[in-house]
Image 1: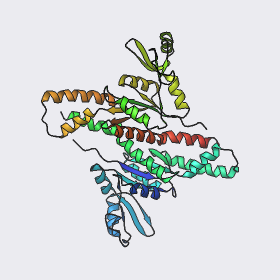
Image 2: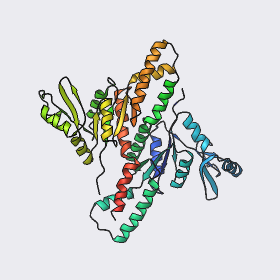
Image 3: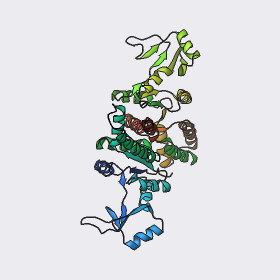
Image 4: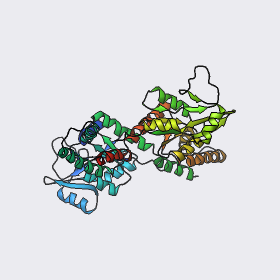
Length: 204
Length: 204
């Protein structure tokens, strides 16, 4: 029988929401979740290990990967390429391990095109929660401030639409706990499990 | 803005799987989850409180409820009626509280017809897990034993199909933790949250 596949967990959200902080906190809890390793053309810094911190590539190697569609998403930043090798992600999942990808919104949507079976988590900035509180409370803001907040909220809702879950980053540990709960729940999803049992029964 | 609705959590599974044990263990953890109160025509036992242990009803009252379609599901057992009043469940959800319903498979499917937005959890008997182990291991059982197990497994898979989640009851605490994770994850589901934020933005 085929082993159950691992989950691809994509943690994303607007700039400044605290994706890195939440991801580091999750990492410190030593769950079984693996972390995606990016490829980059920038030079390794002291102590950085190839295949652990990054896959270090030459510009030619990186462009070869681009040509071969070997990256889930990529970007150029300060003269260097950064990208997510699809092979590493797929290998991890196929081996039955979960892998998390921490990534900005545009990159996440590209990942979704390639791997729609991923679990897409939108980390919500506390400002939206704040907005809710303010609107729920007494209205003391000027119309301009409220309008600006509404524009931001609408843009964020538009981004949220493509995600499976929305996690409020009101407090790092609370956000980490929610992400862990989502991973546990996703492993209990009937559609993931039933395939496994169908295979099991059809063996006969 | 409308308050977010609570979740209806339906915990079900084959007879003997340990629904009651898991539900009691969950209850002892003092989560915020409420518990559905059944209506019955049987006489109260010493210490039982109306509206807490059961809603105690006369036969006429119960039949009136049946006539008014006021029960999510019901059954007659040893000359007495038992049923789940829909009002209590709906009131709890509308007040923004989660409520759990522990119920056998036929009843759960009736609940699903009335309240498809519920979170349906199938508690899986360890025997199916056992079956998996045995099939994965070396085949030492007779064809008859294997065939019988396969029939049971197929029936169980058929029931599972209608559920959202499958929780293996390999160990009570592990099952309780999975259920708690599912509840947390369901509260993070984008489709539940986005409606809330859409309302918020459309207020303007």
